[in-house]
Length: 307
Length: 292
Image (cartoon, rainbow over all chains, first blue to last red; front, top):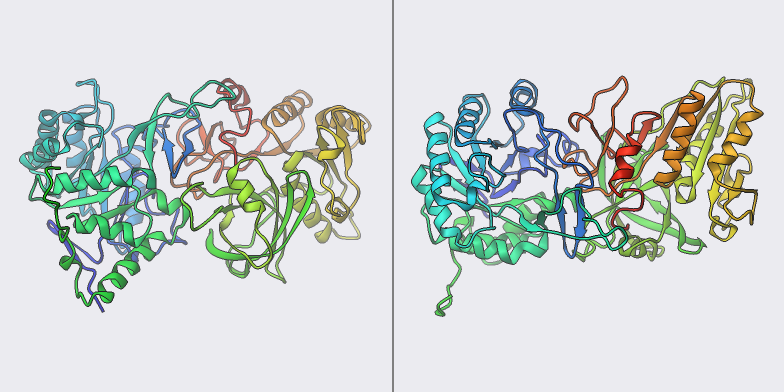
């Protein structure tokens, strides 16, 4: 039987499959459908300093092989998270990675410090793809801002810090390296792509906002290319995500060098998706006589062409 | 009992009972054993497991459920690609479902006459409720239940023997008067309540403009009631926060943040007065958002 265990920086995961932020709340809602002890890790919904109700509806709109979301970082706030949500996750059977978002670099650091100090947190994931007051743009589009936020967060806690990157940049390698310089223990990518859809009956956006974030199989090739570029830019481990629905998709990401794979939208269609992906990776290895996931991580054979 | 299960159900029957109207029966033993549906709850149904387009599951109200058989029924109206694919399923076909989801209709005091107001395919949960109440009724204290069904015209009313399975014939309203009373189903309710002397409670399900009108009427007359909404959904399990409506919940908490409620979890059944219909109307939500 092939071993699915992977080392992700300082974390040892039972398998490379991770439930991504925003799709799994704080692990409770899917409790009866998805056994947490079959997952490598779960990443919580983004936690912010203050509770956020989120954006006006509609917040989801289906698109070809995908969906747009404009949830708006709806969350209970760090107080309630630490007081109620996190204690409920103690002993849940898998690594808990807490995703946080601040309005300023200082706020990111404060959240990292507060959450990092709490019991049962395996890592912090910095959600850098959210509009930012002091810079007026996504932090993760600016390498210098990324490096600063990561550095301050790393200084604030001993818990490993991961940086979640956006694909909405010209060169993801620049931001990946900035996160590494800042001291990130790993990076996760991609977050959603900016997208839009207009309703022909009302002439309005199909979302409550003008644009939203695109996820699902439609973005997988974009995500895969970004992961490949990031893997080749840094030495820290990469958690690759974006449209992964089946084991074959996950294997593509492992081949280009991701050490773990994130699954999000697929869970809405099929709660058993993550378990099936883990089983499918094991089957893939067994069929080739391979004994561990490490044998396929980074096994992609690059083309001789320039790109 | 589990909050929800995922199951590969099997289609037992698919009857076309009107233009684009389908009555499906499914075998779902896992659902029946571990998460049996209550009136008002829904199933999240995946159009096609093999295709990523359409991507999302469609939330479909449960029409009926037989615990003994493990048989669950739904009433589908073909509206978009997802519902078209679901409606094309034939006997023996697999159908991936997640359920039972959502907040069911709450019990109502038996001394109150219960008026169920259905618009179009909103009939489903009220049909389930009416049959369940009738099945549980005590002979000594029979419960008065009136079901009102509205449609634009007679041709859109469900055939196939569906309405004949109700405990008593429904009262019909059609916009053009081609069957039953001429006018809206809410107008019919108003007429009937004029003759009603005892205490009354209402439950409604149908298109948003109908529910908004129903709630305005209930507020004016200070009548208690429940409304069952629909909304485009992501996960339907309460995790993604994608299906919220503006609402202030009376006497209960929301898991959706200040001023919002999740139609999949705090709903789809809400108390009259909780949902902010003005806010929904202002957002162009008074239509099937995105198709089904």
